[in-house]
Length: 323
Image 1 (cartoon, helix red, strand yellow):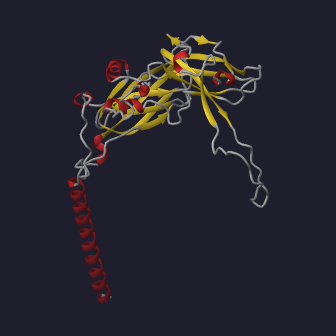
Image 2 (tube, helix red, strand yellow):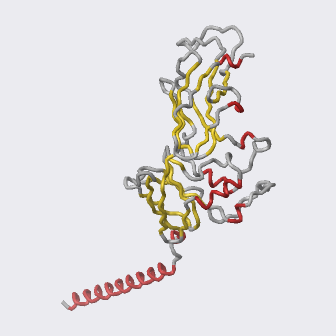
């Protein structure tokens, strides 16, 4: 019995020592945890908001939301002689947000988490509706771009905070019509595009334009899949371009004239030899509404609001190219 009591005492002492060691280890871990640096998420915030239609005040469902960093005041100066890019490695310690993309839900609300603290433009994009500042950086001068800044929705994101912004979408204008050949047959499946009358891409010396930080930011205002500048004619030759912001525009299409003699392909990959002059690609001809081949003769559509132009018809006559 005495031997059993001694063994029990030794087990009790060992258990007590293990318990004390465990408590000490826990305290040490707690002190080490409290001394560890704060989580890096402390330098980021969130942006929440709602998007509604201007004419109905109903929620805009499944709109594309872009959060675009706002250039600093010092970056708004357009350099006449931009510096030559150096091959030296960048000294920037932390990457800068380029673009955050989200979408609205059934109630028109959205939430973007993980945005670094700073100032941002907030853009809501929906086909058929005008996105402020969505004119591309190639179609406007730097002064025109700067004049847009006060009208663009913006938000300030603070570290660890939630910023709120509400957006309203306005319906754009519509240009539609019918495309026919000179004999009255419809031009089916033809692509139709619009462009500003004062398109600076056609000005001499600006084909290799260097974009300023503001221009680069505004380029992020277009949707990820941008189809707003194009339409395709249906089986009756009818087309419809929508979502146009105020401005002056010309509308054009391209027809392809294939001068080749055709091609025959056999199931073994062979084919009959062709004769005559061969063209690898069809001859592409630009046609402006109402059916002219020179841009200076094109009809100019002046858009002031959300009007609908329904009679922008094309009459395509290739004989007009003959001298």
